[in-house]
Length: 414
Length: 155
Image (tube, rainbow over all chains, first blue to last red; front, side):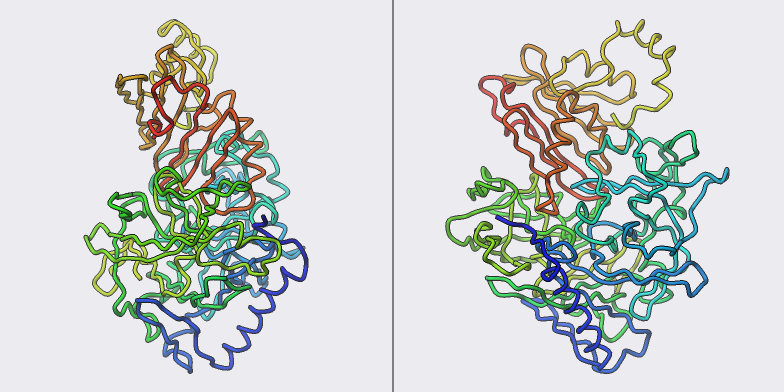
């Protein structure tokens, strides 16, 4: 089985699709957001009355052909200058906060100011994801995307050459993802529910193994004030800064090579981003809601564009076998048609139907597709509603500390 | 564990602790003995609750940062499974002890899925899930699970 495809041509196809989307959108073409049960977003054919708050995203194999990713381009500028670089193939991640770019993806000669402590020592970060941590220095950048701009905020450069030594308390978290091969993307645009990547815990504690000061004698763990942590770039926009919407069209059961959609900034701030009839599920302090499935409730559940399947429970709980050659995906003998209910802290709930297809079949070498709405696998005792969940619906990510059309963030709505 | 402050690694302090707790290895770890759990708890200032049930003993610890670690010990005092749950990660190198390197080698090869991690080796199972601000996972050695106990007990 394959989960990724090698080859220059298969990697360039999504990029070509992305370029075409940009050209089409400049000509004022509408979005392709289909929906199943939620409020369809129809972007106006002329730009909204505010700034352009919509950027094209492509769900596809991305730069390395890893299935079920969604990517966009961001433009970084040295703060206050027009010295800029546009990075494509950046993973759109609603499961994390913060902008992270591979050092290897930056043009040679492009540099951003290094964040330092009061002794002029560079600050580094080891940020944990489930599959591994990203290690690298914290730098300051401007970011432009669609018509929006975030100025002079902390971001991470992953795998910088001058930060080659990974501290012990970073490698104690597990493997690190320092390269394109590891990450499957040129960077991560974390636009999740929280405004900083770590939050109050890293401002209060120095022993979480996340933020470091790195004098020549070696990196030491530090507390990192909220304002110096990696920020959610969207929360720094002048307007359209209270959340995002992921709008992706649906695909058929056999999937697609790639599909184009939109990442829309702001909720209820312009004519193209109203909540409409979407059901708002408020989240707990950890960004989770509860999924009920076959009579049992799982409280650490969440949606995440950065997960590349529907990951839930295990064989014992579901009766679905894992694939013999890849125990991280399910391989039912026939397609499973299932349903669950998601419920927020606010008590609102909404059902969801989903299918589980045999992953060996979807990912066989003869299958040309990279996007599947029925790719699933075991989780860890909860529901991780990954990219398949986002296909064919508009999903709203409401930020913490925001009142959005009468709803308190953080929330997920669809 | 991630909540061990760096200052505890000084030799003088370690000696003082040894005098107090009749020196034991510093890490509570998969495959280690119950005494390693006790040493850890004292060093961390973590709360600890012990529950005896049929077939195993459950030691539950909560760090000041809200990371909960459970260690499952067999009747002969060996830790056969560990679980963790909290906003950030525990120190897996200490928690998995001699099994950490095996985990790292297997995890480094897992590039196919972007999401929960499931590592199944003949002598080690490691599962990780969640996202930043909500991580959980478990690790156990199937061969060490006591008779009459199943892996489902390790949560």
